[in-house]
Image (cartoon, rainbow, N blue to C red; front, top):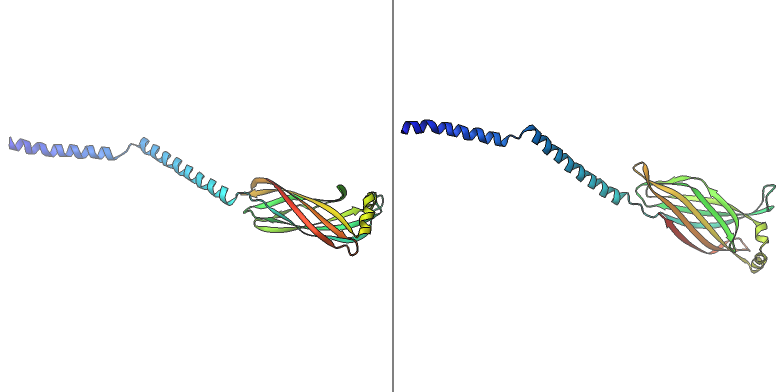
Length: 214
């Protein structure tokens, strides 16, 4: 009986080893399923990281538009056929600061000059690009029709007083491009008031207000 018990023990041990081997080896279908789940989790994590970076780095911040100076360059003759034979040349020196990590492409700028709520001049600037975290200058020359000023009864009184108050309105439309695609549309608007000293055509009391539409 002792000899029979000793011969059956190795058989029992080999059976247990074979069973352990089959438990540790996963079938191919199960391994594929685990791999797909792992790839799915990795994709979700990568997408979440990319979204977080995009929202942080490429979050659109408001560009800053500044009226550096308004200068009156003097009078000049208007082209033939114009409504006013004499024009007053006004130059608006405008800068746009782009604080974003993406470029700002603008279609151009529009500047108008008003006297007592009446528009007396208008001009457009060229299109361009403000690179990431850079500042660009937009100089716009506006020809003011003197005839339009003369039609206002208050103009001669202001000239006699030595000071003429004017208002400028500048608008810049653009788009912020991140990763080669349109990220956000931007509209910059700035209204400025200033007083022109008749004696030397210098600018005084300049004050500006900016409004940004995202």
